Image (tube, rainbow, N blue to C red):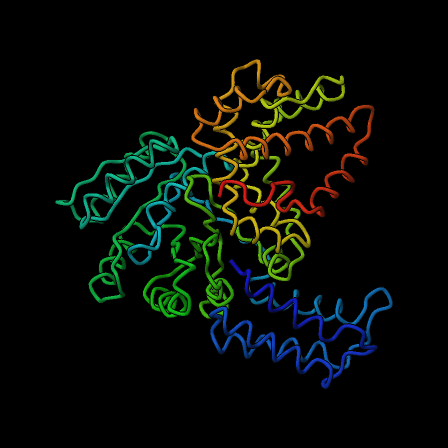
Length: 461
């Protein structure tokens, strides 16, 4: 999300570089481009107008700080106003209630409500150490109830059964009573959706909300529906006392304007971003961090938190010890690195959070890096344990056997081995505290003719 917006903003900000002072004249073109970029990203027109006026007011006539050039000063202002537009800071869930705290999920059909219920349950269980129950009050779709039951099992949440013959209020009330008896901390109630807003949907969810009086009423909205997201959010906000928003499919090929508009038009904070299909693909929404990502500055804090949470520290430590002892880095180690990368959402997701690496993350998406990494894992799995430990023994006949077993070509295997040798060379430089050398080596690979961190052109084609 925001790739196009990031590119457009980067181009517009370059236009004011080299100026000694920020004035109305020399930022007018840049502001015009910023306005156009925001509108093309589906940001609501009133929001764009307010944003541009705020930036202009702060930027025009400001003396450039000694430590900053004019473009950096302008970027700082744009970043500050983007953050302000999206809500200043992350707003966490309010769970300060007599257990169980009740969370009601609302939204249109297809927005990802049921999946978001499971993701939120996983988030609360893993990061907040809460005992969670989930229940479906969608009495129109038996498949929705079954889907939630399946997801609840995946995230290890307690599932409260319901049927299409029951009333939504009855289902929710019985679930809350059951959660109290089981001494659970949170109950998340899934609700029915429609393909469009209608009176029946609104009346039903209003009755449900009044019957259970949830401490949090979260509106789930699809980031990919663009401008309609704002109108839908307005309608739900007028019907329900919303406390926050979950923006789903934020990793898709969306223009992203919904994220920039929802807070400004409803006054309700975006609390979470759904950034993938996996049940752990839910991130707290940090306006300041997202503003940095939109402007191509990366999001190092989120990256560090992701590494802390997902990287297998025991395996990582073993690899460090192995390398420092001078033991050879082998293909088993390379496969583990691929898997760790996948756990973090893939290399594209990682690079998107690194300053200045947004373009490379887009290259990886276009090259379908995830499937290419998977193909490399399959090649390694087709080798014998001895071959993985000592790739030098791979002669012509062994290579033919491996590629036939993995459904790939000898060229693919040779490219994998080339990448392995580059990685092994870097790992050698870590021995004896040569971390700086290793980082220089990594930089060399990223800037070499081998795109995507050493993945040769045409791999997997």
